[in-house]
Amino acid sequence: MKHPVKRREQGRRSFEFAWPVEQEHRWIEAAPFDLQTGVVGSKGKYLIGTGAASIYKPLESASGLFKNFVRVEAKPTALQAFTDKYGMLGIGETVVLRKGAPVIFDAESYDSWTEEMASLRRAVQLWDAINSYQSGQQRDLRKLIEWSDRTSVKYHWQGHLEWIATLKIHPELLERVKYPDLVQPALHFLKRTVDGKLKQFPSGPQLLWDRGELHVFIRPQSLIAGMWLQFALAIEGDRQYRTCKGCGRWFEVGGGQKRSDAETCGPSCRKRRERTRKEVKR
View 1: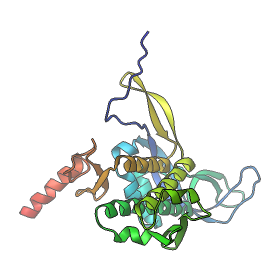
View 2: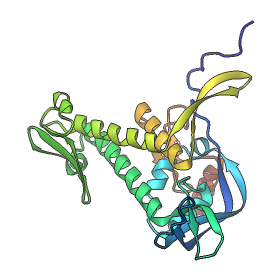
View 3: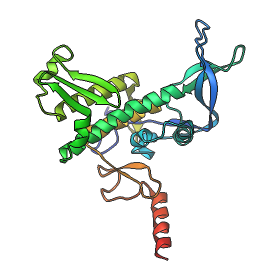
View 4: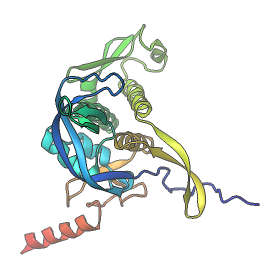
């Protein structure tokens, strides 16, 4: 008997990810609560969702979601607006409003949101700087990657510093990255960063039905995992992105998504763009 399992057609997606977006999100003052010990931590600002949830597929409907995320302002109102559109990150914890109050599950702290935004922003900025450097624009990468001497190279960004390779820290890399090259140290550090986040926020393989056949898909376990996976796939495929002239959000162009000369991310934005052009001509 022939099993309905076939090699995936070229160009067919390799991931499957659906994620809920609740009707409303709001900020609350709460404290982290350890269910095992009963210990209550210091109060902080937390985001929660309420109401019925709708389901969407982030990696398909928002092809440049990771780039949109890193450009959100680190302000509660801006973070809430992002959540209202795309859902929670999936980094929730248990909190309590006050002593004796009911426990709330899956609240996401403001500090965790800003920390994850900064981590992804640093990685995306480095990737953009590598691409710019290879196109002849060297300034951005020189700001991020620096050789202290011939045996030590580091990454630094707005007070965040990490050694990429020295005689004591990852000395094996000194055989692969040669002074005064900037691209190879940057790529190794980018790989280290992305691998760490893919491990922290995992995506797992799973056999799923697709058009009557079984295929292996990668399935992220959270929205933040999905955005890191989307970024990793962008690095692998050297994908190109552009801001939509209808809504201002980033979207992928070329590579089977949108035409390389596309100016909008979808039909609704294309119509909005056309209406704007007509109004300008009047």
